[in-house]
Image (cartoon, rainbow, N blue to C red; front, top):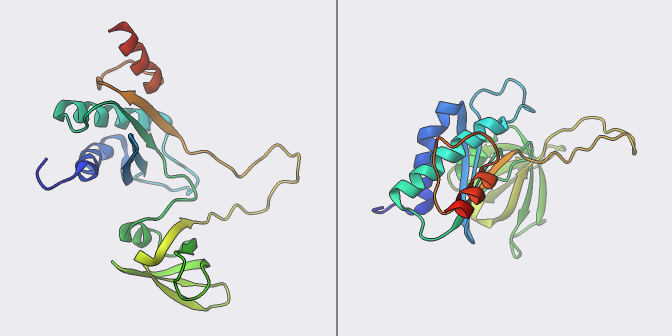
Length: 202
């Protein structure tokens, strides 16, 4: 694997295959046996238009196949390929730069000067710092290393009355599979179900 770690290598694999399915990779995380890849549509005329589940399933199969072919991860692992959702988690400088102009909600680590919670428009972003402008026009600049948690905030507009049967809590679409091997040409369906059936039959 050279100097690249697992996350870097999986990111490179995902970046290579995502455009084939009209997707772009937003993030890759690997912790506790869960490898999570988030990807979104390349072209989003409607901000509410997330990636279709079929697109995520196809990308999931490609990534899983390459991981197994290259023997990148020892032992069993769970691969989850999902859309980032309307309210996205921001972790890296690239995440912040891609979200310029959007409303964000920030929580800083304890000990950082000023209020720990900041909300407003993300008005500037560099490799190391961001600036958030409040609705009152006040600016606050924070080092990215001082941020414990950051998410975009989607404007849901007028909310339905209680009991109206509508909720703003929209779950991200995801394709999840537990892997001891995979085949990029498996039949359509739930990747998790297919993998379990394959292990049971072996």
